[in-house]
Image 1 (cartoon, helix red, strand yellow):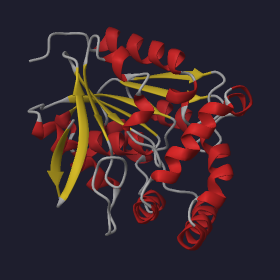
Image 2 (spheres, helix red, strand yellow):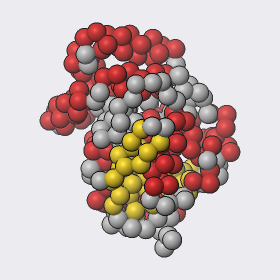
Image 3 (cartoon, helix red, strand yellow):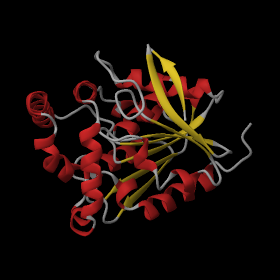
Image 4 (cartoon, helix red, strand yellow):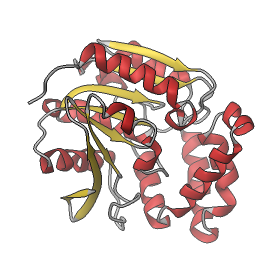
Amino acid sequence: MASAHNQGLSIFFDDTGAGCPVVLGHSFLCTGKMWHEQVPAFAETYRVLNLDFRGHGGSSEVTQSFSLYDAVSDVVAVLDEVGIERAVWCGLSVGGMVALRAALTCPERVEGLILMDTDAGAEYLYRKLRNSAMGLGARFLGIGPFLPSIARLMFGATTRRQNPALVREWKGEFSRVHLPSILLSLKALMQRDSVLDRLSQIGVPVLVLVGEEDRSLPPVLSRQIHDALLDSELVQIPAAGHLSALEQPAAVNKAVLDFLDRRFTYEHA
């Protein structure tokens, strides 16, 4: 366990394995724990940096507004802390949004991208209204009353039907995130800019992966990203919703490792 410091905050991370560096960025409301099935598999061949975004897990709670570009600088601080110049940025949901912005604003730090269940556009108005209402309610009532709705957005129908224990476990994890940090993180998500018209500027290899049952950021959004990139592969994961890495870890690991092994297996200084 280690930490880096950026903008007065401490960013927690684990550093495992050796080889081409892969940095993992988790979903909103999650922590690096969501990659527990990926880290040991990836670390057999790659150096894996698994971090908690600001306001989540072991990283500092947040009390002031921030943007996704601030989150990019948090990841760069982690890379600087361990002396890594370039890495493959692998992110799910907000983690993918951060990775995309890293590729556009500091391409010298990005070796490749793995974009999972994410979006390159700005937030839709109806989602802003829904999320604002949910955030307002959580401010007064706590997150508890909203956990059933959150679970339906985070987990696919197959997982909710076949693996209710996983859903229960992660509803507990969601409820432990610092509420003021949740609200500020939600604000950063809702105020994000669109980078759709800039995707053709990204020249590194990209894997775009999405759960076929993702209701939160549906597959059409991943297809949109894939179609706009210069060097992209698209994989859809059956029987998975938004948190595909948790729901179908074997299929996700196979897809990601196949991509990494073909494109990034080399002796990294």
